[in-house]
Length: 507
Image 1 (cartoon, rainbow, N blue to C red):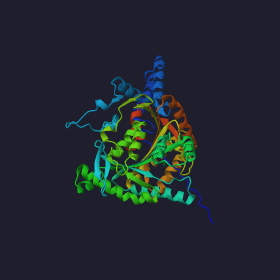
Image 2 (image 1 turned 90 degrees about the vertical axis):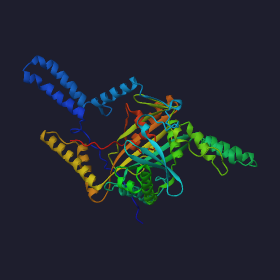
Image 3 (image 1 turned 45 degrees about the vertical axis):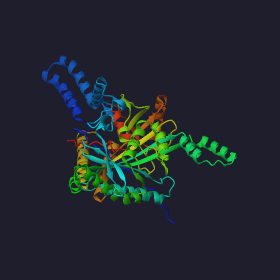
Image 4 (image 1 turned 135 degrees about the vertical axis):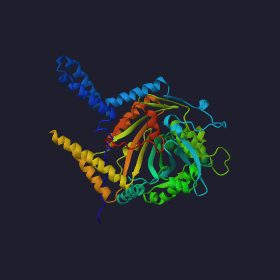
């Protein structure tokens, strides 16, 4: 009997979006200015001018090429200036609740901070007699639906099933890589929440028989006291985003406007379900407007999770109280504060990191497990955001990337610089990726963000250190988001499909 080897994965490519090489537009301007200033003493034939020109040129070149924690000096300056302006104008503070605005009818709409303020939750039929919540972004012209999913996991299954499920997920992503496809973004979001055992004790108290033997009740209480606090709640969400611009003809044929866009998105969702099933994913439910509001609320206020969970469990036959979820106008936080490296929201503090480096070597499909393992002192949220690219656009993008790398290799050869092993590996990966694309594989853009949230500020340094250690074990390089923790929280801790910027094409 032949044994099946577990599949390995690798070959990720960094997206090059510099204005010139790896320099941004401001960095290129600083480098050019530094070069001009350095040559001024030669043109003026004044050695005294060199005492001023050379230090200034060195400072400009340092700002252009110097790096601090992975960011160039000019990027730090832009972030610092923008953050200080926000602090001076108090735009880093957000107050809702009694201060929330109301519309002309006296209703209070969903009130979210920062760039999330533009979002609106719509109500649409799911085609099966139920309702589905659709998140509308009028600025970007997108419509997103969120579902909660369950998966049997990969660690405890045999290698053949593991490889089959991963291939099923790859086939699902490849199926979305169509030319001018309506689906512009797919995001996977997972939360790992510490559980103090209160829910387990509440359920046990409601279902415990009065005639139960005292010895059995005592043994059950001892078991819950030991196992309950070490338990972890995991929630996994899949977000599908439709672009109104790409699907304008289909939307027009479905009645136009928001109603037509919702109908097109629902059709796309129904068409995806067989592909998701082949990947071993089970859709628990497509979130209703109240369910989507609850998901947003529990991210901003972790203490609300237990209360809302108890309310959802209480909706048994005959229940006439509050329905499942919560009203969308109550989804946002009561107050938030954005500092340079930490985001405070209601009674919690969050630090968000971006995955800036994936493993260089090939890895197994389970390599992200260290990131998601339970921690009793903090909750973790991870978002992986995919953007499918059509075959024609992928061919142009990969050709552009290969041209950039070949031009840089030629420039290094002319200047006598030797090629490093990292640069050689990136070039080989670029050729392998283009060959895979030509053989029928799909190409996607990908970004990943990880957030760690605590309700005790003293636990935040420990929780961040634990996350960095787990990321190192997974072969990931994390970079803390500086000066934009509020935007990063919306992309990492909320399953809204945010976080992947538009493709910036360099020269």
